[in-house]
Image 1 (cartoon, rainbow over the protein chains, first blue to last red):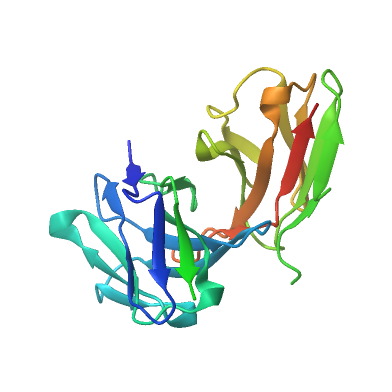
Image 2: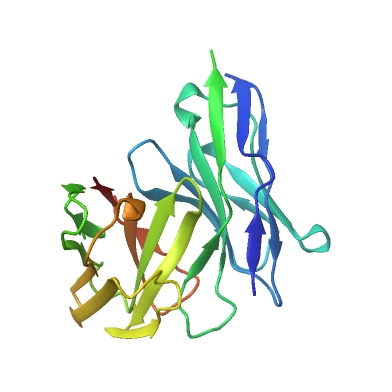
Length: 116
Length: 114
């Protein structure tokens, strides 16, 4: 069964600093990978997704992620963090079965705090 | 489209009462998912439907939980009787058949059972 691990529960960075959030997955085939962001009291918003092709994917709000099959990783990055990026970030992998739509398995999340 | 719509946004109920959460998926989406978010367990899938048919309910924690999708535009998640440990945020999401299109989430229902 697929699984997702986000090793960092909390991360604090200074505004303007770079950011990398780690994500490792376990999956039998080529994974469909996602990063979602959740602001306090809000639902989940998609930041970016990977299905195939270029292993570096660009998302909204200046985020990008790189798929590395050899490391089973899909880390999220941003070159310069803004205070408004403070939120919880979830990495997710789509279902292995083709008939399960985008049923997602989520990592535990990483809570990002931004220092002024 | 207004996106996935969930109601109510907040629900406070007493232990033992019946609770019904509602979801309207995005029109044209074939899949509907119910997730629960808690501090202890994170985001976990409870059940999902394909074309209104329940496909996998292995994530439903107990028989007190039930979900229905009577038509393509409406689904309910019911807890009867509710218990304090059911307190969580419940999310509904929908997605089309094409897997390269992501799942879209509602704003969630925050349930508190006292």
